[in-house]
Image (cartoon, rainbow over all chains, first blue to last red; front, side, top):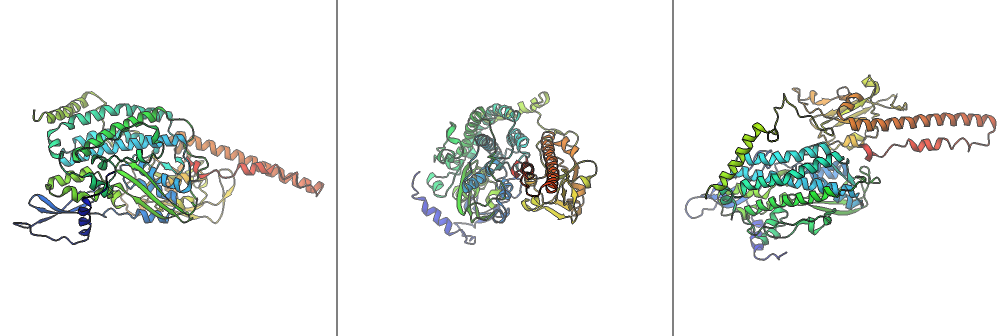
Length: 394
Length: 223
């Protein structure tokens, strides 16, 4: 990874002005226009506001304002048992509940020194990759929706997502709030019928990705509006702690599945797609390519999933008191590095429970990407970050 | 050619639109209130209390141990214990809940109560049409509204219910064995006491295996 150089100054300047009340500075002729933008409806990305200062159509200042969806997740988790936090993690990034479950389970397993059976590891990989595919599909769908393609591309994404959610429902009981993983394995076993259904869905996925790509990749409107827009330089991306497809689209080869090799990811062969123009189009294409790699991982995992238990019979899911200590479990969630940092003081509740949300940290460079662009492009740049406000505000 | 990409995309959409008239594969939605897709067997929406037999009050499996109340993440369960006791499914005298309320508006369908219940007393329903016109009372379900028969449980989750029944029958057999052993032990003890006072060691062993067999199963095996 390259060392941060010139962009430190940019970042410090931005941080200095963070708490400063918005000042309207006259710039040349005329005044700046202050505008409150953002998705305001909970069923979009979430409830969010961008205070944008405009000089004509150009953005000269942008201040993200969040906290509208704050639910006190960390403090609630510190006052309840380890198990009771598990369903709350579903609600962080409500598109990817299974990866959230995994990250939390991983942190607790590190804290108590719990091993996970082989079959459970495979199931976790399968479910995490399905989650990645449906997250990337719908995030691309939302991006195109924000570009003005109202509805149609999103419906293609959702049609495919629905098949994956049906799989989740028949295995875990719920489409989105899965609450599936436990400390030391998974809650229920997947039946052979479920695995067959999963294989069938995986077999159909490449066709969907081809279709999705073919009718958008060469679209003139899409290329005109995304190429060269919202450039995020690799130095700044590394500097600001950006992770996930955003970082890889900026050309930095950093995938926790490769770096950390948590779970059993060292057994699968997959490539990490990287961008070389660092713009919105790269972020879009990196997600497309990651979906293809995920399909490859799913094929491998569904081929050699072993038999056996899915839950360590000695594992305790409730009423345990971890020894005093701390643990950090992190995984490559579809949006970036999702980490849970736990400190135990020997009581049944964690003493400190901290979530490292990829969405919040990826959002911090929004201003740097938007400066100098038109208002209409701010919406696209924001969409290309792929955030869920449930995770930003927690 | 400029616009070729757009035309390609529109052609794809046209193909899907026309295809939905001829191919069932492309028609992915149903007209909801009239047509319904059957729910998945594992689906979970809102908990209910299982009772055996026909009388819901007498047959409730719940023994008011309050584990679910303690473990419920949003704390939507409220239980009041009884002062007296009634026999449970294995015939052991247990306390029962005089009050068992769950707030629909707070419950988040996470299934933790089902997992931690050692008595197979609370399960998840698949009925998702829970809306009501009454904002306050209508959303607080008491134990009568929550009670569902074991037969109903069999109709919504057949595989799981069969497993649960098997486990309960096993427990019942073990409890009977234990009761028999205890009775025998008592009889033997009485006989021993009647015959010769200094030989209590013989009476003790039969009771021990039964005791270990009926130890409550680990909470992790709830499913």
